[in-house]
Length: 274
Image (cartoon, rainbow, N blue to C red; front, side, top):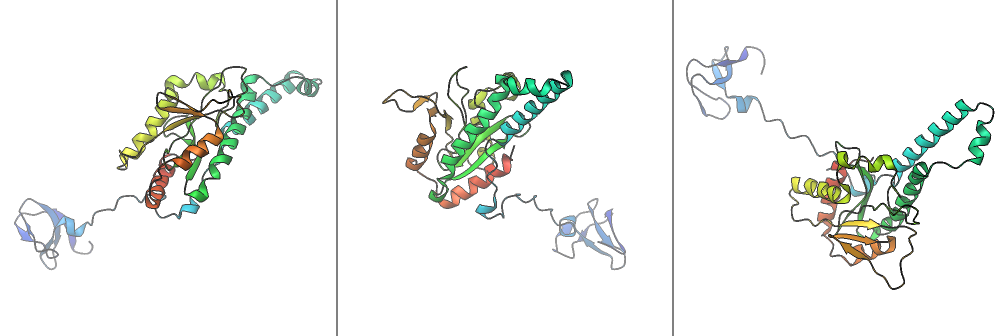
């Protein structure tokens, strides 16, 4: 509203020139002194639309799936660089030789192994894209330092990791044998995978998806499974290996295509790339 029109508290009742509604006295409305007309605030101040969904208008193929193992690889690179800088500073002459002859700490190597494990699982999951399974990799849980390694929009829509026993050959989709510093963060970021699955359920419920099933998966990479053994289900968490993830998703009852697209967008918007 401009010119001779201003917002004021009416001393007398009036009638809105836009919608014809009665505007009682003492009501705040817009009054035009030149025409002596009243416009109610709903007509003069159109409601501001809700902020648009940042991924609502994106075609399915334009939602970036993320980089599997990206955050684990960056953590490894930071640790390796810090170690190299420290050794070179402490031993200016022999530093290069020390680095060549000494192994990195296991807590550092675990991050590289974890990144590789995530990439292996991502390879198996990405093969299901032509079959209607949409995947997201290495996604940050809002307001925490935790991440979800993989999300697959079908049934189940969640896939996560399991820290293997120390010294074992098992590798997981994200984090491998977790570094001790990550294990100490459990109390702050949540209690492992059940907490992460619950976060996915909360996001879906917030968008009207209370009935969308969420299944957690713990995946071992390069593990030696006893002959004839099959996947395990422990407290509703599936424990398996990469090929079994693919088989599980193939057999599962899929959502319709519109449902897949919708929940893929919801998850992509809520869980950004780590």
